[in-house]
Image 1 (tube, helix red, strand yellow):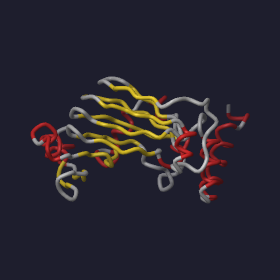
Image 2 (image 1 turned 120 degrees about the vertical axis):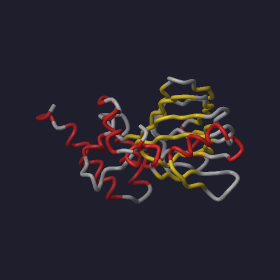
Image 3 (image 1 turned 180 degrees about the vertical axis):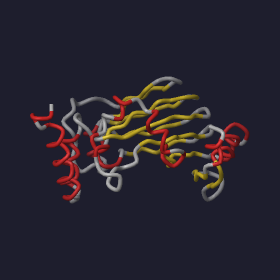
Image 4 (image 1 turned 90 degrees about the vertical axis):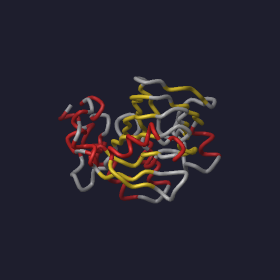
Length: 208
């Protein structure tokens, strides 16, 4: 991992207009400069080392049917996220109707979830998946906890400690129908057709 510390990354900062440097510099500041509000959340595993994706367990990678697409069409949906004390992510719904998993390596995260029906009422999504009607949920994630965010759930995250996590988004068997509906609702018809083709490829009886 020593060579990975020289990888150039960008991070958000509450005290300056963004921050750029090496991964090693960032990890050093993570502990030593808590007042900077540094949060690295747009750095993919591929940015650090393309071989790191293979370290994600195969059953987890296979959740994402879009991984079967050609390189130029395949979304890079695995990230290394790290933040200082007090950082976080405001309320949002994950892009492209995707679901997500988050494995916390160190620190603690506080998650607040709103069900899709409420996200729909707030105008955060154009349509809501057919989940049971549920109430808002709040809980704390500890190191080693693997958290799952279903499609359409709005969520906000706070980091009361320094945190490092690996996270991935996916569209697959459980949510591809919602993804198709979502893309049609936002007028992204080519993406809807692409998801339909992917679904047909994965559900063909002669390849099961």
